[in-house]
Length: 151
Image (cartoon, rainbow, N blue to C red; front, side, top):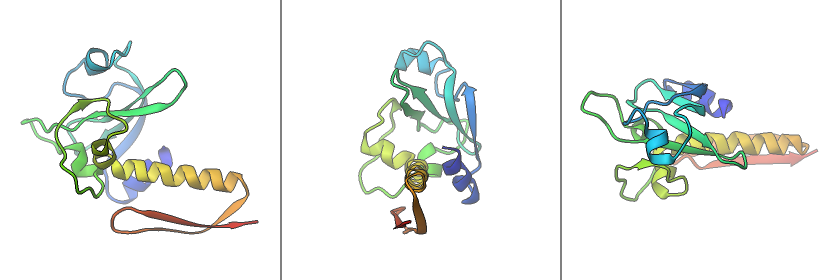
């Protein structure tokens, strides 16, 4: 995850990855109120300097992390998360709050983060299996192509 955050920073996104932190959400008790979490503290939080809210990652019993965020823009200011992390998407995007990890809207709203995470996970897995990364290209839509060579 940190490699994806580093890449976002290089692309001009003002952000930081926090551990064991309380995310900024619309409700001060959103993790407990809407998601049934025991605490407001999450294992990982992507703090977005230019946004009103953060992207939190909650952990399932099997250890998997799920992104949770509120893409609402309050009248007090700040950008919507999709304005900072959004990927190309042709569908209608509506406001929502809560956990919709597998929806197209989530894939759009935090698409740049998910693309970077997927890229670095694939690179880590490939190099661990003995492959050499020949090239890594990304088009204007964020599609990533890795060219690998087997040693």
